[in-house]
Amino acid sequence: MPESLAPLDRLMATLTRRAAERPSGSYTTKLLDGGAAAIGAKIREEAEELIEAAAESGQDGRNHTVYEAGDLIYHTLVMLAWRGISLDEVAAELARREGTSGLAEKAARNSDQDQSRTQP
Image 1 (tube, rainbow, N blue to C red):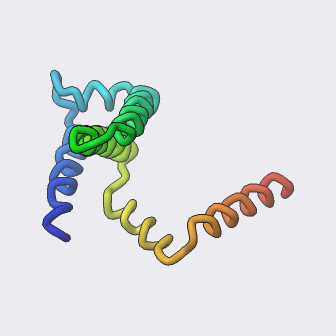
Image 2 (cartoon, rainbow, N blue to C red):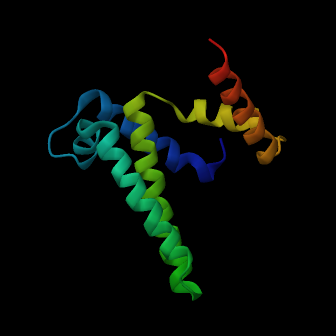
Image 3 (cartoon, one colour):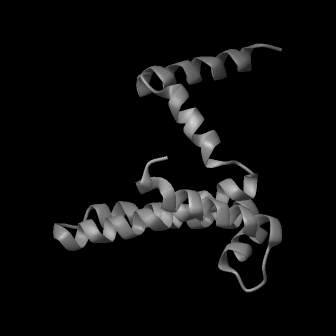
């Protein structure tokens, strides 16, 4: 694993432990206990904050964007831990898509959904 990704791996290990142990007084535990609705609300909030920060100019805007990206990634990892999904699974999904046009992948997904609606 690249050294730059080691903090994500350590964070995911911590979140996985918290999901299993649910220590009292932990912000992560509070989110996990709230389930998809609570975690999802934080992901939405952090995504909006990231978008707003990205629109800010200069180095301060760049620094704010990095900060908000960290918050969004943290909350996304909490959701993965809640669902029992590992970073390796997400990496495998990204690898599966590698080299595939995002537009082609979306068209295939939409075609699959259309077919499932018309089949009994």
